Length: 388
Image (cartoon, rainbow, N blue to C red; front, side, top):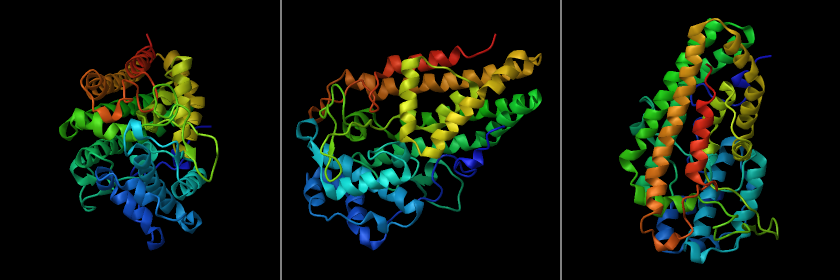
């Protein structure tokens, strides 16, 4: 039976983005509202930790509804990240206080996310329209909350959101590929694949605008450290971070990563793109950082991808095979452009003089991978999916 996107909390209006995110929590949670809104200034004055340690453990069960929970997760993720990285590598604490750790952990458990800043919070639920009466665009979006590097950080969030918004244009076509493959309707599938190809090209164009207002040195030295995880080699917290009031043992978690976006992983599953086992293991791990319904969608589409592969391989319809190959090529080109961005914003910057505050920031991704070899293998695996 074909997968139905509307059963996986995918919006026809915003895709994987949360519809109409809330901007502020009720007055009871004003400490969280204030700390998250003022985090960059508090980091600059080196006072965020002191302010955090003043607040009580608020009763997270007073949050009402899913959108309040998602907003609380953003706020606590920003406060928690800034608390850890306020003083750079040399000043990392081994634990985070219970006033943040207890609600952060429990809210994360409740909504199926991890208690760390990542794509699901910092992008998918961290946006609003400047003017709701106007169409979605880079210039009509703004992030609700930012990290140090304020204006550049806002643009990083906006450009990332626009890639997600652009993906919405492919949703109907993805459903047609799923249905048409199951029905063995090669004309329907070919037309849908052409639409997906056009959308993936538009996603690449949306991503290119990242360059306009995000200086490489600001991203690398100012913003990127706050998206880092805790645990693993070359990390100031190699054993992880203790969440006081939750566990006496440190917890290791990955930082934010483009692999936490459901867009490319869904396209991989749809097109039957197979990655090397070690690379696929990491991608599967990143699904644990997605909203659970989105992760389940990727899994279920992957389990249905044999319908498309069988149809493409056995058809005498050259147009279908050409449409499939063009779609795979578009995903390959998107991955190639992502490699260009990573080279500009991370690899080149890593080879220059870095800010001494964050010496542990390296060529590894905030998700923990050795970036260029990892991304190049993903791209090459994608290209190999084309049919002859």
